[in-house]
Structures are given as C-alpha cells and as structure tokens.
Image (cartoon, rainbow, N blue to C red):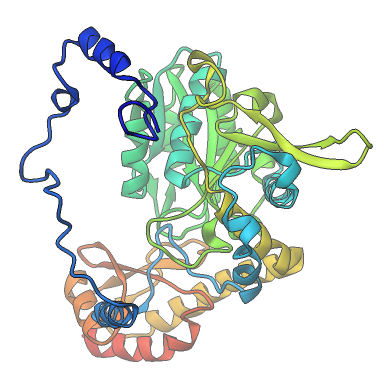
Length: 442
C-alpha cells in the first residue's frame, strides 16, 4: 500500500503536492469539472437481487424485443456460424489472452491469427494482411492516412462513392480531419460507380480513390479494373471494399489494380451484431512497414522449430509517436480467431459454395418479389450479392411499417425503395415474407 492509500497510484504525499503545484491546482478535485447531474453520488440505484431474480428480470427485458425476421444487410450480414467456432473459441486460453505479447504462452492464438492473415492474402492476391482492425470504417480511414504516407502525389482529395454507408463516411471524415485531406464523392450509375463521371473528377490532386464490390446496394462492381487504371493514371491509391465471402468468387483485387483492400471480415465467424465487426486490411507488400496495427509473423525458436510472434507493431503503444502508423489500440483478435476458424471449417470449396448461394438466393428472391403487384425488383440491372433494392408503388416507409407489423424487417433506402437481404439464416422464412409483401404492397 502506498502513502496515499491507493494501490494503483504509487505517489507519496510529496509527489502529489509537487505535481499539483506544477499545474497550479489546490487538490485533485480541481483537476475535474464534472456536472452535478452526472456526478456519482455514491449510490448506483440498482436494487440488490439474487441470481434467480436477476435471470428472471433479464428474461423479461429481452422478451420485450420484437421478434422479427430480418432481411437487413447494408454491411451487416447474418451467416450461419457452426457450433465448432463457439466451442473452440470459448476455450480459456483464447478468452483470457488479451494481446499476444508473450509468444511462449500464446502459440496457438498467434498461429490462428497468422492463418487469418494468410487467408486474406490468398483471397485478395495482395502481399500483406494485418491481424485485424476494429471494423470496416476504421480500416477505410487507415487506408486514407496510409495514402498520405506512401503516395508521391501532393494531392489532398479522397474520392468515394456518393452512396456509401453513413457510418463509414462519418468515420472516414473523422480520420482525415487532421491530415489535410478532403473527402469528395463521385456519382453512381445504376447501383455501381459512374466511371465516366469519376474520370472527369480525378486529377493530380487525387490521393485516393475508393470503390466497393458489392456496393452498399448489393450490386457487383463490373468496372473495378477501370477504376484501378484511372487511379494509377493519377498516381492515386486504389482502395477496394469487399468481404471474405464475396472475395471467394469475385475477381482477385490485386489483378484489378487494388493497392489496398478493406472491409468487414465478420461475415464469417460472428453472428450479426449491427455494430460490432472486424476490420479487414490487406495491401501491397511495398507498404509492409506502413501497415497500421500489428502483424503476426513466422520465426524459429532456438531448437529450429517453427514459431509465431508479433513481428511488426507500428502503433503508438510500441514505438515513438512520431513514427507510429496509427493509434489503433487493441484489435479484434478474438473475432479474427473466430473468422479464421469459420473459414477453415468451410474450406475453399465450402467458401465458394456459400458465395455462390449468396448470388443465387438474391437472384431468386428478386424474381419472386418482381412478381408481386406494385413492386419491381431488382432496381439495378446488375449482378447482385446477398441483397438488392426493390421499388414499391406505395411509399417505402409505409410498406416497411406494414411488413414490420407482419413480422419482417427491411431497410428503407428511398421514398419508394426498400432493400432486401437474404442468406441461409432467413431462407426458410422467404415464403411467408413474399406472401406478406403481396398483402402490403398494393
């Protein structure tokens, strides 16, 4: 116990007096300005209950949630997660390992993260993948700041699609605010990039061009290679957004000219959380020492055995601040572990089969929805992956409200547009959904 009675702040009374004097404060209380209405008054206001009463209260609270069949997507996708993932990832050696700083006691976890990186390298065709970031939005933000470090252009313009998930755009704006970068949008045409319009916007001031496939409206980007060429012509970085399931059947990003691939890897290994994900970040090997976050690498121990360790950790906690590539603190290591387990369980053939189903299910549901009076689907004359937009004669909010009353949740994306997403987890409910849509669409 220290002189001031705290086991966590090892300062003597003299230390405290010297620090308070240096900042001109009379006591520790003067260092904080906490409004009275949020100041802790010593009471939590939570009634003490036994375990049985707590469980009963939680059950009653959760039962108040609407029990809806979700056809929601737009960046959050619900795929079946095999029980093997839960059972293995819940082992204590994984749950209790915060960060794998001590390789001698974390070989299993480090190997799983190395396999995660290796899978992303194979799916993207790029040379390097880090062992996860917070989510797709922060991965995009990190790609923008990476561009400022590695591109020879002095430009400040970051070009993104006009239809971009709102959360990703807000995070990107926050990321670039301190880097003298300006985020601008380029038009979309029939659900994908308007490449001709993009060509007229891109110039020598462009430092990064971002595109997605599938796009936020579920359409597969058919001209990604042209976007890559366009970015290269202006010495701008080409960043492509996608996810591991889609990447298993879409053209390899490296062959399209992508310098960086970002996205959400939580399409595997994690049930839909509508908020929590895992950031996918892969890039060309030229950027190895500029990759944000951490990398797991292969080494040898003193007996020559293959081992794994954190090899590059270019974040502020580990190196001088002025040399850090990012302020990413912890990462989604446990979620990356689950993603790697799910991908390994599927194997290459299983992953491709799952992706093929995402194409077929969307096509089949669009055809059924298009057969409903008062609805046209899909709106975009494109190939779709998991989801698509449908046009409704009735105002879309009214259609969505009536569907919710019937037990189905859909996205409203326009005055007369709803977006529908289907995977194996809601497939059995589609007959009922189509029947409900027939009732409410007229």
